[in-house]
Amino acid sequence: MSRGVERRGVLAGLGATLLAGCARGRRDPRVVVIGASPTGVPFSYVDPATNRLTGAMVDIAALLVQRIGLVADFQVVPFSALVPSLTTGRIDLIAAAMLQTPARARLVGFSQPVFAYAGGLVLRADSSGRHGDLASLQGLRVGGQIGTRYVDQLHDAGVAQIITYQGLGDMLRDLAHGRIDAAYGDEPIMRHILRVGPRWRLRMAAEFRSPGKESLCLIGRKGAPVLAALDAALDGGARAGIMPILQRWGLQERA
View 1: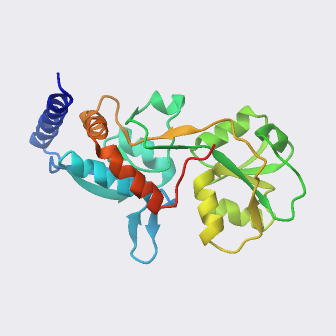
View 2 (view 1 turned 45 degrees about the vertical axis):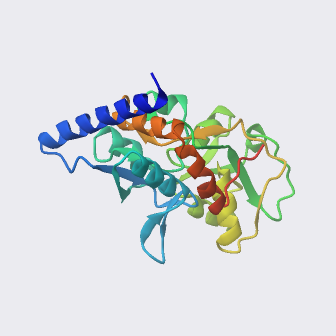
């Protein structure tokens, strides 16, 4: 079977599934409701100038949903509520800085990866300590974002004093004010906040190496036809449109 015939078959199945849902009284079958968190700049966030969702994952989701002939309806959802909103049917996809992990894979499905990155460590600028890995943070007060892979990694490394936050901006503010000793989370997001946000006296720990990079994907319910359609679009050439989006948002995969 040719790739084009396979892709048409996937899209036909998706349309039939959505039309069946509409017949049961659900929303417009052409609309895919996409949840995105409001604080994950530059991946997904609410632009204070327009009060609208924007970011690299928002742009990528919009591109891919358009490629499969559907309409994206973006909804603001707190990061910790994204997976529950998906599994209960309030949204159809997640487009946010939510990495593919084995624990999440037991609950939801993933598209092909569109980016990959690792965790980063931020310290106060006057900190004299060197921290090459998470184990070196034992005995410190370390911030992590609720619902993320990074809190689990801190636990696995034996860090006992973990203070959790809804957003990375709040975590970095507390670090700047001395309420915690280090902040661990999404490296691209924290790097972006340090570059364009408040002039806190903080620094990325250049010597730090996280446990490893993980994949960033669009997320849907397990077995959802929309995920197969997105993968078919990526195989069909839509991936070429992702690189300019990542470049526009200043994102690059680091070693």
